[in-house]
Amino acid sequence: MQLENHCTYELDNLLLSIENLKYLPWIGKQALNTRESKLIIGESVYNWEKEAEKRKIAQIKLEKNDFASSYCL
Image 1 (tube, rainbow, N blue to C red):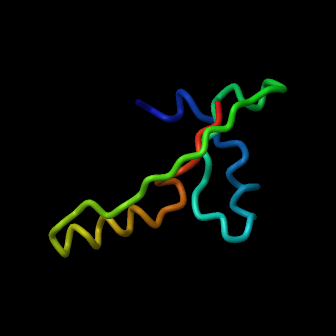
Image 2: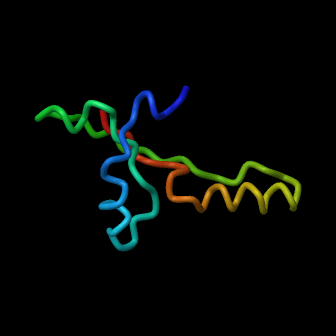
Image 3: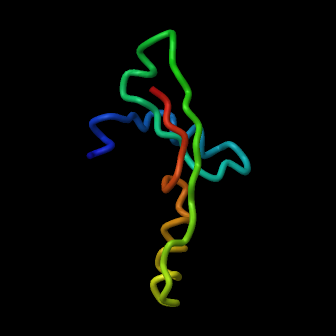
């Protein structure tokens, strides 16, 4: 699945200005074109790797602000 087909990134710069915001939400492509939206919030993030070097690489990915997020339709 390509997120670009389902999400908009129009609010990312505004959201990045929020202090202590760990992850950027995924915002549905049509969410900004409607008066009603549904917000589904969930987070499940953990380092799944067992080998030390792979754990370091996975940790770098986990720390990116777009790795895990909320999803708004």
